[in-house]
Image 1: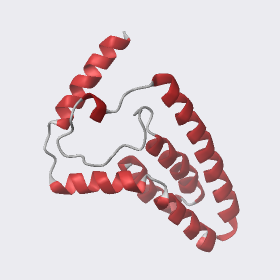
Image 2: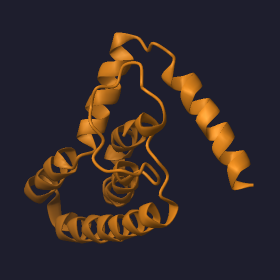
Image 3: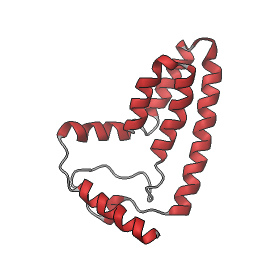
Image 4: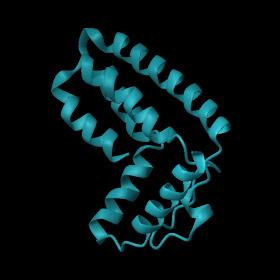
Length: 138
């Protein structure tokens, strides 16, 4: 069963990687990936500290707790699944960024993005749409 899934996963990966994405998509993907490195969330949290009103400390605590749980979860799952990154399986047609680690599943960037975005959006609902665009992009 796992081989069946892996075969289809690799086929889809090769199909997607052979597509020459338009420049704006490549730039969006690179910016989103780098945004997921953490600096975007740190900036948002500083803004919340400065302008977040009475809920700022609860927001920071909720985001920090969720991000910590997410980090522990993805580190554990990466060790357990050991799924190779696409660039280790086949050359990518346009990506030039080096991966942050050896394994690709689950995405630490994505888990952290949603772990911070959800509590942030729940405390500040007017920000939810923009925050979710950032999280989905990452």
